[in-house]
Figure 1: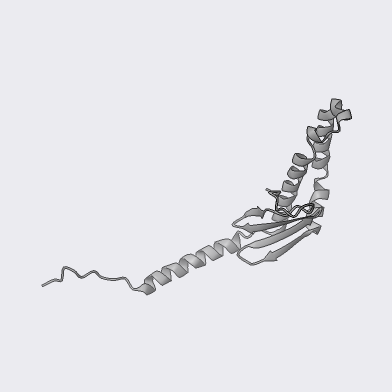
Figure 2: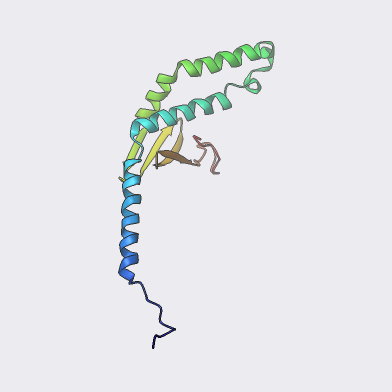
Length: 144
């Protein structure tokens, strides 16, 4: 007579084998998509250029006596930042260190007293907040 309460069990080694295969695939994917330094330099210089334009190249930064020329000054500032792309890229390159952990990388960039830390993995970057060198509070100034 057949037992009705019998359920065949899967051995735990089957789960371990599948888990090991999945972890190997994940690690291989992470290692393959770990962004290189040049990718980070391009990313960081784009972010720094955008931050400069956002914080410096705006009408509220124009002195009161030059308000009649504010749009021309803002356009000139934006153009200057754009034309100095290679200088910004070179500055970021010289002030960046990379810690390569094979599966991901941690980039540390120190520019104008700010220290930016960025995690690179899966072909993407995530920049963490930095401290403002002029205050003891943490700010939301980021490179992204």
